[in-house]
Length: 351
Image 1 (cartoon, helix red, strand yellow):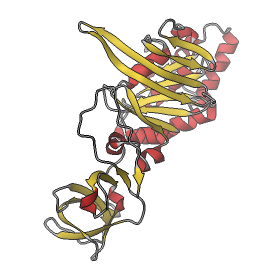
Image 2 (image 1 turned 90 degrees about the vertical axis):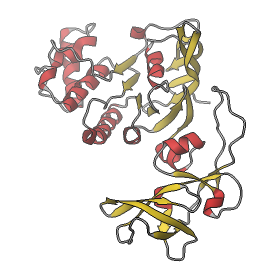
Image 3 (image 1 turned 120 degrees about the vertical axis):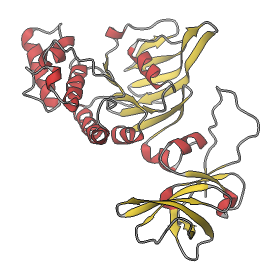
Image 4 (image 1 turned 135 degrees about the vertical axis):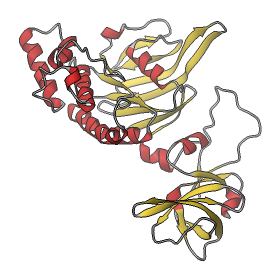
């Protein structure tokens, strides 16, 4: 089987404590093909940045291995130093040198090149990121988006085989993030760069990545493209983490069988003859439509995205039906608690 340009196999990473080793990354595996953009998506503390640091050579492995372009970079027994890995890293705070101009920042990792080659590579990187005339500027003279582009140019200048991006949009205004994520994706695709980013923001992950790993407790719960994560989540955690929606008892929806079904807000339809009755708790205007917060007869609280023409006021009873496409269903949860290492990869059942 083709393992791809990057192959991470069952890695463990941890930190020593007074009580012993605290495992932060637990049996994690992933692969990226050349030119592919991957993302580790998860809440703070799930281990995603630790994975990046292990790939860069800043953290040793307790188990597993990391292979890049056929070369083993890390095992529990030995690891290549960061400077010999062919891995570039764009840090969360960009880490630009304030006392150096843009050209010197980009050329910082090109000291082995002669002056002419170095100048040409800097100019090439400035053109790539769309800032050809900013070589003499200093970081404080640039906007946040421009600083991000310079940090990217510096990371790409040595032509790494793999680019790592640690929360690359966290220092930017919210309204800029998704637009800049799309721009950054276009730049990476133009350059043919293989990249892996980490983020806690789903919109950034969806805008940037070809494939996304949803992380929890140091493990990847599902590794798939955005559409698959949304439409076919592998387990209850992914179903609850990705997008908006509710896990509801099948009986509350009039469906046969035990267990729960995942219902997204856009799967609800207002229908006077619908079999499901719900009380309107609140409404929120959304331009062409509205989002309703509703209570089902069993007490479950749901959200429904409905057209703005629907007459809905708090306290009103609304008749609903489900859209005529398949729901993702999960079997009943086991009664016994699971150990921290075990993950619940129950296969969804499509109605």
